[in-house]
Amino acid sequence: MLGFGIIIPNLAYYAKDTGATTTEIAILMSIYSGMQLLFAPIWGRLSDKHGRKPMILLGLLGNAAALVGFGLVKDYVWLLTARGAAGIASAAVLPSVMAYVADITTSEERGRGMGLMGAAMGLGFILGPAIGGVMGSHDIPFFVAGGLSILTFLFALILLPESLQKASTDETTGDPHEWISPGEIFRRTTLKSPLTPLFLVAFFSTFSFSGLEMTFPLFIEDRWNYGEREMGWMFMFMGAIVVPLQGGLLGRLINRLGERRIILTGLLLSAIGMALLLNASSFVTLTVYLTIAGVGNQLIRPTNASWISKQTQIGQGTAIGLMDAFLSLGRILGPLLGGWLYAKEAYPYVVLAGILVLTTFCLYIPLRRIRETHPTS
Image (cartoon, rainbow, N blue to C red):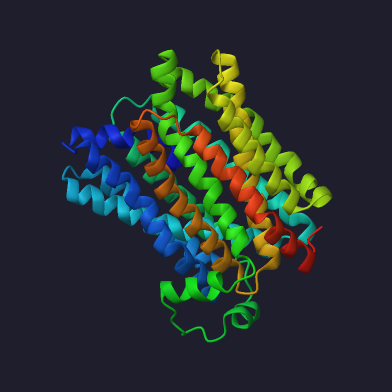
């Protein structure tokens, strides 16, 4: 995530330097999440069959090659190819790593483990843009991020033991040579799965917050004439709250309150923070309301992953890969709605907050049934 954060401030500028239009830049950004949507469940299933470590290593190495390739090419078609390849490779890493956490933690430790994962990801995403923003040249960050991926590959290769035992692999996946298409994976594991409400939580929480992220820079510029510097301070403050919460308190909260209550609280906090943004009157209140929305959103992902990992009957990698696919779909569609509403001069935050409230209302009973059928706390 540090490498991912480093390239974020530079990706659009680098593409623009090569002659890409605004629409082409938008497509360039969307293809990354699109490839994750398609490949995260496949990589997750392969990690259940063949182990976590091989998928992590393949993903890190592929991601490094894609990042370096992106920094070398100047033609848009090749930029698109490199960005798509980065999405495919990164889709192998996070589901496998989160499944690894599920493998090595007990049910009582699961929430803390996922919380630490969320904190590490958040810290990388906070520090990355700050580092990438001071590098001067728009192509250097891609080489730096690629180098970080190679270093992480070497670390995993030498020091990371495999977490999935062979007997467990055979038991959860059956025939290791069986091939299942992406469409069949979705049909078997979502449409008929008791965990579908949790996948929908992943989608709608990401859908709404990515719509906020898409329009927030425009919102603060149009209303207060704030720029990158002010936005950076806001996200730094939010990260200072979120990272200790995920890394230190979330596990204990999950064990005490249960995943369902944490997820419902996160959805409502995120909705409240978004709705309040339009009433912000200063830099301080704007930062506070953004932090409320961010805290709510960041409570959801590790808690959701913890709950899914405890209840899945289809393999940790497959289930978390499916969750990541729903997250990716939210990252694709959320900015489209947010940008469309903003272009219509209708600030999208009330609409996005309303979607979260409706999601909370509609999923309240289905989530309660999961908890009652499979107690987790």
